[in-house]
Image (cartoon, rainbow, N blue to C red):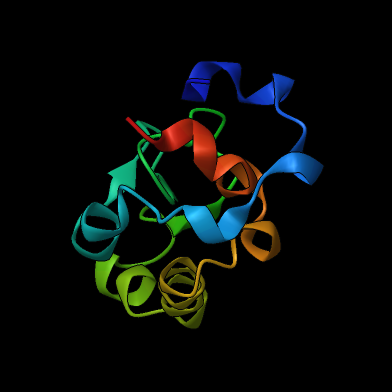
Length: 96
C-alpha cells in the first residue's frame, strides 16, 4: 500500500522489524515547514500529525536541536514506529 492509503492499513498486522524509515536521512537533515511556519516531521506526514515546533514562535535552531526532534530521530533509528505514532505507525506504506 502507498502512503495515501495508510488509513486502510491494519497496524496490528505489520511486522515492524521488517521496515526502516526510508526518509530517515532526510528527516535528520531537512526541515518540512508549512506556510504557517509549522515544522512537521516528514514529507510523508501529509496531515501534519507530528509537529516539532513553529518557526514563527521559535528559531530554526531551537527546533532542530530540541529534545522532541532528537527523540523522534532516535525512535526512527530504533524502529519504534508505534511509539512515534502518526504516519510512522504505517511505515510499511512509506516503502517504495
